[in-house]
Amino acid sequence: QEQRLTQRLLRYWDMIRRDRSLPEIQHFNAQSVEDVWDQCFRVSISQRNGLSYTYEYMGKPVINLYGGDMTGEEVDEKMRQFPGSPLHKRMRDVINERKPLQDEGHIVNSKSGKILKYRACLLPFGNDGKGITHMVVGLSYREF
Picture (tube, rainbow, N blue to C red):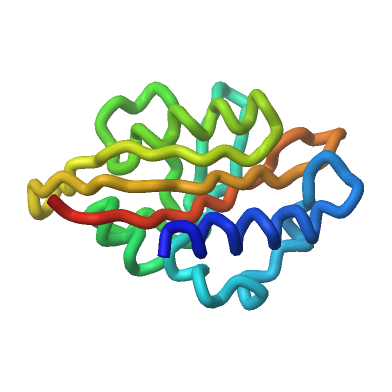
C-alpha cells in the first residue's frame, strides 16, 4: 500500500512536470490518481508574511490522522500546536529544495491519544517565477 501510494504519486508528478523544473498546480487532476487521492491532502502556500499553508483538500484517512478536517484553515510555522506539525517542517524542506521528498515519523492523534506512524510523499507545484505555490502530500499510516 505505501509503495503504491508513493510510486503512483511520484510517477504522476513527473509525468505532468515534463521538462519543467516543477509542474504547475493547474495541470494536476485528482481523477488521474483517484486510487490514492483519498490518502492525500493539498495545500496552497503563501510566503508573504512568513510561510503559511491553507488546506484546500483532505481525504478521509488524512482527516482521521489529523484528528479533524482542516479544509479551509490556514496554519503557519509560528504555530506550535496543531495537527500534522511534524509534516510541516518537512514541507519547508520541499520548498527550499524544490523537489519531491519522502518522509516518515509519528503523530499523536488528538482524539484517540494513539500514536500514528506515518509515511508521506510530498510533491511541490509551482513555477520558476512564483516558486512553490502548492503542495500535494500523500500519507499512509498505522495506529499503535
